[in-house]
Length: 233
Image (cartoon, rainbow, N blue to C red; front, side):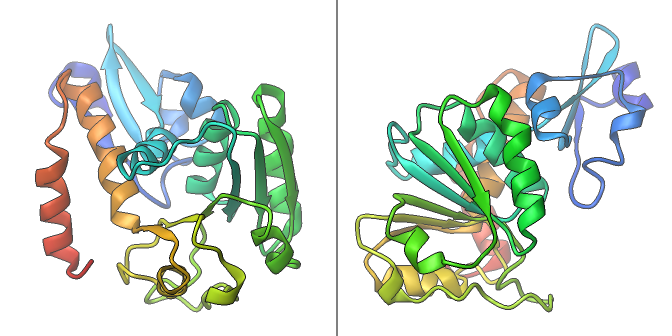
């Protein structure tokens, strides 16, 4: 952090589990970081070390890159951790019609919903993972932000099968190990537009690159490199 303050580094990218732990070491936070209550990007501005969050805009960029128009859509987020918070904070101020937050611990989902409601421009609802089938019948976009289905964890995949989904829907899973998660396998079988987790990973990094350098990142090159590292797609 001191190296960023001195100008020895353009910036730092911060990942789990340090996105909140880093906050006391910063001088200021951007609106995006305050709203998401987490920092993943650090940069200097006039000698001050700034904390920013690009996860939310990275998720929106990933959707836009795949031709998804958010206007008047009904969006559901599964999860209430750091990435879910950032996405919820960003989406709540976009021209969507409805935002639903679901989490295994319903209270965490409700707490997140209450946090974003003051600056939301859409209806915001929250609850647990019960009634997923009914929820999926009433949304356009599903964004999976929990550890469900991730390799190396004890968290099982979400109980969502292809018969619960519809071809008009978009399903994005931010998990990228495996690249094609059990949820995306089911979504592809249902004919949904699917977005793999590396898309958000790359887009949030591209936004950080733009902040640090003032130039657009070579997203296609980044995409090829990340997919080559992870494999598949």
